Amino acid sequence: MNTPCVNICRYQEVDGEPRCVSCFRTYEDLEKWIYMTDEERKTRIRQIKKERKTYENKQKNFEHLEEKS
Image (tube, rainbow, N blue to C red; front, side):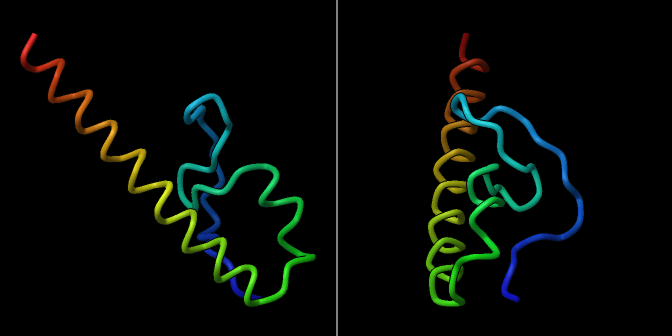
């Protein structure tokens, strides 16, 4: 089964939604994962990577703004 899980499951709020800090999946992702086809999983993994990148960029920008203050 194709999964981004690395067995380090810890959750934090990311834009108002709990996400795993290691694989970045939501609770909804976890609920649906076993029912998804391999192609759906691959697509979702690509989406999650983009979502993580967007979040990380937003965090970097926020930290950069705080440094200027």
